[in-house]
Image (cartoon, rainbow, N blue to C red; front, top):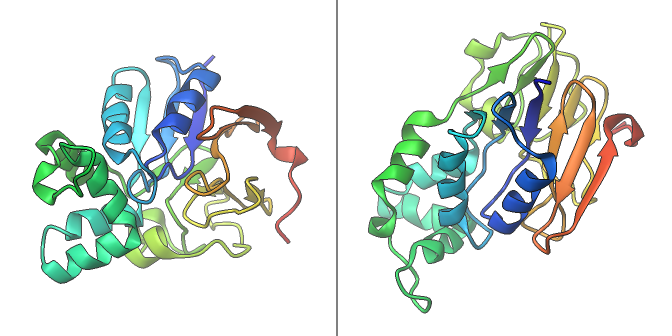
Amino acid sequence: MKRTLAMGDIHGCYAALRRLCEFIKLSRDDTLVTLGDYVNRGPDTYAVLDWLIYLEGVCNLRPLRGNHEIMMIQAQESDSALRRWRESGGDATLRSYAPFDDAEGKVSDIPDTHWDFLSRRLLPYYETDTHFFVHAGAYPEMSLEEQPDYILYWESFNDPPLHDSGKIMVCGHTSQKSGLPVTNGNAICIDTWACGQGWLSCLDVNSGQIWQANQQGETRMLFLDELPASN
């Protein structure tokens, strides 16, 4: 059975990512939409990006761009952009690329395959007949191709209205410290604070089933209709 799956913000949490992929039993028939923010904060950005590149041969991967990927790419452009990125969790990313355990890591340690994935493979949004997927948010009265970058990558989740398309929005970006996704019926946020003390979440948008895993290797499962309403 073909599934459309959405996965929340990974933020360098490779252990949770691997465990979650095992838990949901990915297959070639699955479309997996990863919602961005693969890098920064968590300890294993290098391994996360390697795994996502590997998943391109395992399932129908649709990787979205997040604001942290934007900051990482901009860090190549100037010292000030590099400093802003490091202050936003890029220091942890660089440590994951360091050739020695006691080194801080440098931008030059990041392989071309990872830069290529970040600059060429990431999408601004993805949509199906019933849902659309963005990293952060979308103006309800504006088509997806017209959305400004600020809304797609930086807007906080705040009880959004139904999009004019009638499709339900699935997003990440706004970390839910409860460890639970949140929905108001019009939109679903599945950033459940994997890089904090929360969980990495994956939602089957058709069945409403949610799988979660954390950095300690624990797993749990719930359904969308079991969640409290965001409003």
